[in-house]
Picture 1 (spheres, rainbow, N blue to C red):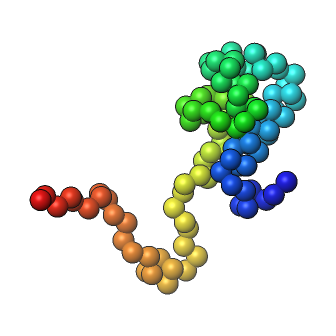
Picture 2 (cartoon, rainbow, N blue to C red; picture 1 turned 120 degrees about the vertical axis):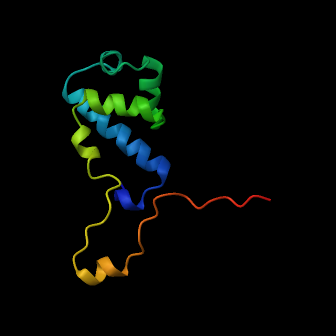
Length: 103
């Protein structure tokens, strides 16, 4: 299996599905039981494990039912500066998107 950084989006989705499948099997849950606990349809859950495809909200429900929410915390965090030079070199954060020019 490729390192996560080297995987395509499809491969990464399938890797995530396989890891959650392993957690399900570790808990001795059927796909029906996992889907029911997460509040997603059985068809969605089965398709997720098979293909890695699922709606974001459904994925979040599955992550919650497997008590894996703490693994989402580091996602999308701003970088921590190690030096003052790094902090100064970064452009100020935009608070809004630029205005559209009217024609």
